[in-house]
Length: 257
Ligand code: NAD
Image (cartoon, rainbow, N blue to C red; front, side, top):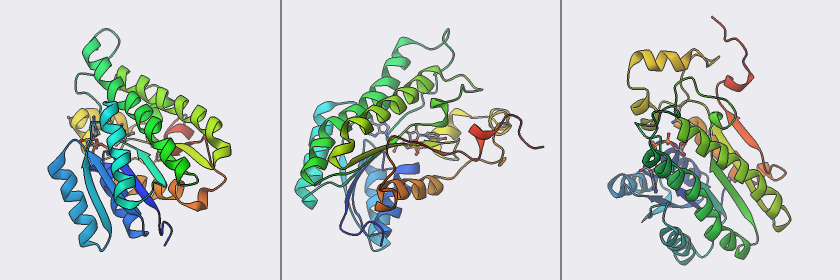
């Protein structure tokens, strides 16, 4: 088992990437603290992990609130004695996120509060816990749009993911000698609720798929496998990376017919 005796905390664990990663980490022997604001779905993730023979607990925390983040880390340590893996994965893509002219300040602020401050607060309280455990792995979910402009306007989201990637690099450098690795997971477009709600017509979906050499949306399970690699000791010399799992998007100039 690749994560035996490790304790992990996953934000956004009620759905999509977070849920699949909770299942994957538990399968590899990790104990999992599932964090979200959607309590019913979070409990469901825990049930799914338990049904598969794994160990998980749910904790309600809004990652945009520092007090909640402080409590979620304390909960992980008091429940399982330590914290080894922190997956700052919760994020939103607001339905009204648009270009610079149409995007409102409210949409901008909410996106930044969850996507950027959420990662900051996770690290603010999580890093001392990882230090207490003698080191660990932090994975921050960014996106391919941290590197490429999006074809469908979503300015606040794109800016937020650029910030997550930049923050990840600096965290990696600052904490490298404390045995704490910090990497950004950069998914391509996925067939999860977050994106399918945003690309809510077939035309919008096809507009996005034009840019994916593999010609399909990625699956949350494929991100969970990537997160597993970054969480495990197999990636022991990997820190500060932008780990692209994007069906070839960032490699492409022209996509195949
Ligand atoms: P999802 O909507 O399925 O899951 C996101 C989860 O985060 C939900 O359970 C939601 O309740 C939770 N969440 C939202 N706000 C929160 C808050 N304030 N505090 C705690 N939890 C909160 O989406 P997903 O596709 O699994 O996305 C996970 C991450 O992956 C996000 O950071 C997203 O930006 C990123 N991402 C997704 C895609 C994609 O195409 N789906 C692509 C690149 C990056």
